[in-house]
Image (tube, rainbow, N blue to C red):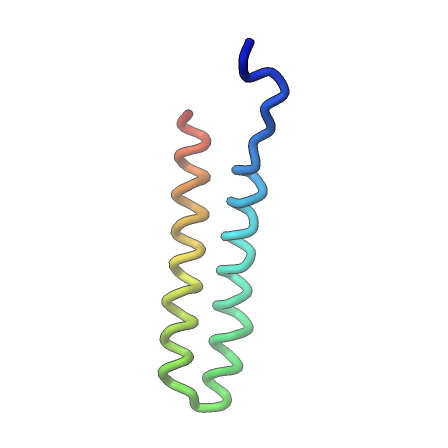
Length: 65
């Protein structure tokens, strides 16, 4: 058994991507909207949805295998 003792960090990475994406969408986008920083708001929105999408995709792939 060459993989005995192998620890996977996919669960931690998946939850971190999901949580940070949701926090970016909730906190950063809201604060940039109040400060009327439109470019920063759109970048934060893109990165937040990217984190959520990557976390969801990794979760689906992890469940599939």
